[in-house]
Length: 240
Ligand code: SF4
Image: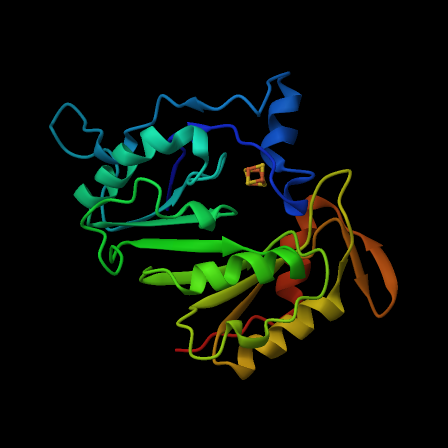
């Protein structure tokens, strides 16, 4: 697994961004996360060593743009090159998450067609309002590999017509971390799991978040145990 952050910094656009981990991380170093900059690893996928070999050796999953949003308007020009690198490195699988799926077509490569085989684009929906706005757009788009991310999950979400026969590979759920974390209720998680399985979509419970309600009781869960507690619940479900 490799990490490629071609640009850093972002702008908040919806409820899920309120306690954004990029802002929290930058605040520790007195940096302003709203200032978006290209990173020194901007061209990491095509960087080579002295022997002329790619630094990232394929096959490999490359988690992309995890300190920004790939479709951020401030990165519109940079994204043209980022797409080129993905096209060049067909031996790598690029995986990224966006809250700006409505900007998908801005500077999309001309040869995108039905999507690049090596690119997974995940759409984040943190509440019903964002599900009802983003998912109809997301589902209409030519993307080969799709996943829905509910993290931080802020309320119960009714997926209605968004799952059945829609070529969604997976739904991931997770609570919110950090000192200001909002509550995540296990009932919401279980309900989304039910909807996923009913529609033949795999489900992954990634982490509880810092404030987790189960059976009406609030648990404050330290960061290091949030993934562990979710795994312990043993509710993730995978279709072949
Ligand atoms: S879109 Fe993502 S990276 Fe950007 S502010 Fe929101 S949570 Fe942070």
